Amino acid sequence: MDASRFISSGLIEAYVIGVATSNEVEELERGMAQFPEVKAAVDDCQLDMEQYITLQAKTPPASVRENILNIIAEEETARENGTYVEETTFSFDPPEKKLVSSAWRWLAAAIFVLLIGSAAMNYIFFGQINDYKGRYEALVASQNTLASESNIYRARMEQMEKSINIFKDPAIKTVKMPGTKPFPTAMATVFWNQQSKEVFLMANNLPQPAADKQYQLWAIVGGKPVDMGVIDTNDTSELLHKMKSIDNAEVFAITLENRGGSAEPTLDQMYVAGKAS
Image 1 (cartoon, rainbow, N blue to C red):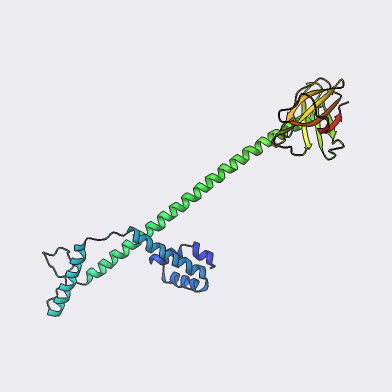
Image 2: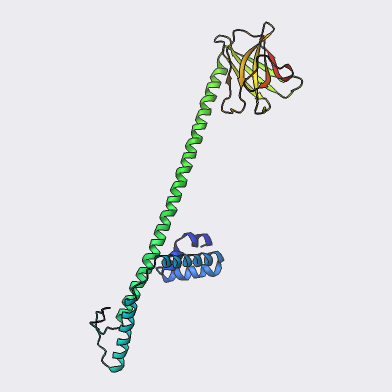
């Protein structure tokens, strides 16, 4: 048995409270000699037990101690005088002054052991309850996290399925918009349904803008720019951004504008552009 098995088996607790069998005691003592961490675990358990019993202890009335001392003194005097009488009952009440046998010592010891065992079992029992409670709370938190992640994945799958249906629509016209000369690595794609006039934008590769900036889609119609709306690239849950609808367009382009969009495109901030026809 390795150190971790000793520590988790419950043998240490049984050893400390005195309920381990002789074979278990020998096995644990070999483990203590072999593994320092097992010895440390036994010492910690014993210390915890002592602290718990100390906390739970109640000081008996002073008269109890006095009565016990009187009984012991009387018993010893009777033995010396040859008047000792074996009895099976005893009392802490001084007026009766009955002589008792040493059996009371065994009874007191047994009661003491039972009290310590009870305190130890309470300590272990409540410790296990707290441990199970902590495990239960951790399990509930884990399940809640999994449920939350499952909802996120479900939403993404639904969004993906919706996007695939858009791609498969034969009425969809795909307009690729490569990066302009100042921004050669940029890339975006417009999916334009020429029957429903709906427009969807995929930001394939657009640099993350500053917090006060947004990308804005434009359609060039008759040589004039038409606002098609802004997108928030921070929203990674959306594969396709639904933009404003349009009947016809010659070119699509994206510029970087102040947050909220602009009435006119900032031409030197045009990142991508692509012909629609």
